[in-house]
Amino acid sequence: MGNQGALTFAPVSFDGKNDSLTLLSKKLMKMSKWSERKIWSELEGDATSDALRFDAMGWLPDKPERLTRFSPGHGFCVLVRGSGVFFQRGATGPVRVEAPGLIFAAAGDYCDYGAAGGSHWDEIYWALAGSRLVEWKRFGWWPPGPCFRPITADVLAEIWELFVAGVDALERRDGHALDLHKLDLERWLCEQSQRPRVASALEEVVDSWRREPQRAWSLTEAAAATGKSYTRFRVEFLKIYRTSPYDYLLRLRLELAANILRGTPEPVKSVAWRCGFKHLETFLRAFERVYGTSPRRWRNQALTGMDRTLPADTGRGEDLNAARRRRVSEKS
Image (cartoon, rainbow, N blue to C red; front, side, top):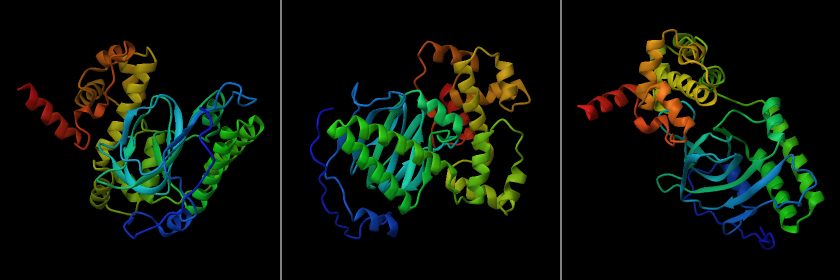
């Protein structure tokens, strides 16, 4: 896009109503804030290398709408200030998130996040394209998404500085500065992936499930890993993820199966086995309960471009049994 004007900032005043802000992010955001939405884009010839391109960079202050769609490409955004909801993989409903934090999404990921219940939401984002993204994934710099990662105010300051540098390069159409910004962003993502993350025992368990949902995980062992009895583990899990541990893990396996069905001609029985289902009948019942159709029909719909809905069509926020009861009621 053309020149969006100079990078001018207005001071932020805090009136005490932003309860979701941490003290650290309050301190950071007193420095500066754009007053209106802005979007920038890299044009052909702006940079020397097209191995990484910025389809868009954006600043969305006080964003009221909630994004719900399949991601057309790779991108990540930074929740700079405020709070809202985020739909985590495997969950039956959105979980509450607070600034500061990072959201990663790859092409084809279903995204559902944003302000909720009148909450405040300020974000910056990069929409990315190019062959370097393949390398980022291979090196582990780009996490499987969509995912939300809380960050510290220091990390927020780093990414904010990177964002301003990138915008400045785009506004000046400075190819050399833009190439340097791309290298700086890549270096930052590499360093970010190597930083130790302070995660709760429950988060570590869930991360393990997300990485390998097909494994024969034991729920009692998962509870023991968090230092709790299974009953307490289940109660805490329900509170955070709004579904039971069993249903959460089942949904992860079904999402994996759906991706394989959509992307390969592999037989349904083989897909079921690959995704951790010991019995084909169990897989078929679970798949139809969540997706509303058989794996074979779902694959055909996906291949013909008819599939535009989430498995959560069965009712995000419901557990699988509730979804099943509702479907039975609708058919009767």
